[in-house]
Image 1 (cartoon, rainbow, N blue to C red):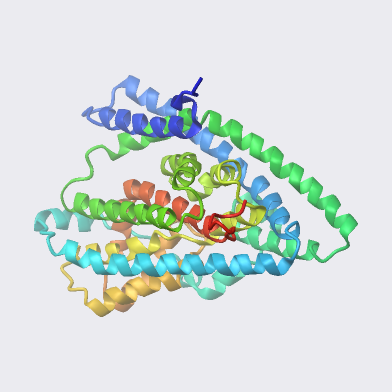
Image 2: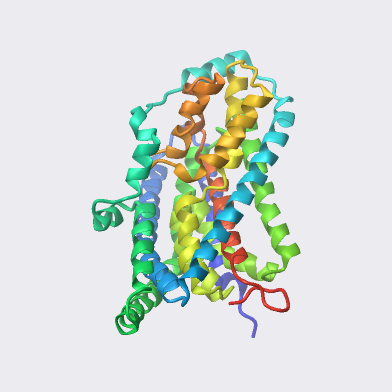
Length: 420
């Protein structure tokens, strides 16, 4: 007997996402939320937040053993180095392609945008941004933040990139020690990784409920806010992210490194988790599970490339930086020159790997850039306020790009497919 599609975790969490958003937007039509609606949203908020905390709980205990096994257990350490170099090459290629695409298409689209002066004045009046101290955005602060004084505290704080770098250092050092102690540690970390994958499987089994709860609360907050100029900006942002996501699938279909259907099936649960939580980090355990169970990628891809991508790679910045700059320019009646737009697009590539570890760090990183091209930094506050709905599709693209990079780092076999 064929298994019902409804028993698939990917289908379940996707349905939970769609039904939750629909219910939330339906509830948003109440002029004043009733006592029942308020109580329902409060309960769903607890369920959704509790579930996402449970998923995040698995990230560090899963990433650390996977990285150690992927690096120290992979034999020749030079192979891992080549895999890392290939991963960064693919990240850079995707960033350049998306930045060029966004910088070319966005101005054509924004030419048709006509703004109501009264509406734009009200929107500008809502612009609020707390610019952090200049040192918080400096290269020095970012570099020093990568070297944790206490790796255990960094793990407890959930700052993944310093933990990843420390774990990589430990893994490369482990690859240099004698075989007996190395194999003992590798056996322990393999067991730990396998155990955490079981925990992830449990979390995904109830993922439909967590995603439904998160999506309902999110849908109620969104309501009918996507109107007029705001709606145009959000629509352009979402469409270009969907086009970029579809482009990745096209490359997979043409390249045939893995079957397109298997790639889509491996990604579906992590995409739904990512869109519901608006966090590619929260989707990392589901990504690892899909890459392991469905695509059968080797440890270098699942334990090294995927955590690395989740830590440092945000493909979405190559799209939303140029679009955000054009929208702010329109909103304030500023003529953004082609050279300034190209500078914004190029900066989205160059600064992609240096996002500071502060709230909305990717947005606030643009503050010096806006000053240099003559855009008001208050406009970034508007972009942050409007980021709720687009952030779902940003995460969708980031998750898809992370899995794509992991697949593309796997060597081909004789028939052209990826080795697992």
